Image (cartoon, rainbow, N blue to C red; front, side, top):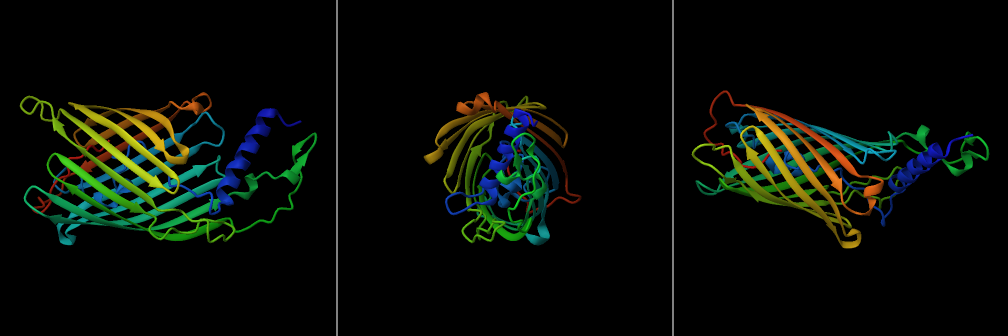
Length: 337
């Protein structure tokens, strides 16, 4: 006889699938998100392509997020990105690959993006960047892991064959995003709009099942704490506001850099129909030369804490300098953990 735990796990995965696969005008899919949003720069805003810290050189970043691992059917997101500034194209070029797995492989999403950002000198102290991203999204559904009501045997559990129709298990769609960034030596602000064409995400051909636009506004500053003895000692308050369909959230927090050590603390609040105090996000990081590593933990503070106490996220990056100094490049002084 099937155990209660396995039954609950199967029912939970089925509910997750139905919520995603039978998406309608009243229920929209969402993009994955990272708590370390400046450790995923080109995912947060395509205008940040080519804004590495070493004289216009390159930057490679890998990110891993495991959301609510205490629950069966957790959400795991992995991303890899590369970007670099090139004087010949008057801006930055970037590549981004992302894979998101939900429900223990029930639903997988893979994205590949090419990004370009144009750098504009407004004054000697004020710069702008304009980004454009072209993307291909593929979503896959593993029907072998689905469980339907007509499969249930009273004593043996899910053992019968189902009469449910099997539809296309993969959909591939194009997508586009854009972004804007303005910055000085100590201040930065940006706006990004993802999913410009709102691609259809339904496996059943429902034209109303769209991936809605994601609007992001982010800003912050870098404040030196000891210019003479330790120029790398800084305090960086920042904020990020995000809106996607009925989901609205605000992240408020800061980075604190002390030599090779980095720490950070944020609070995430959601608004509107799903209003709640969501999580405290704590970060510790380390940087040595051009290598950076960060770990963050989302401590759930709302009513779901008993079942989902927290989420884990890891980032690692390496940067390298351009072979020849790029005269037109202006560094973005922005925290990248």
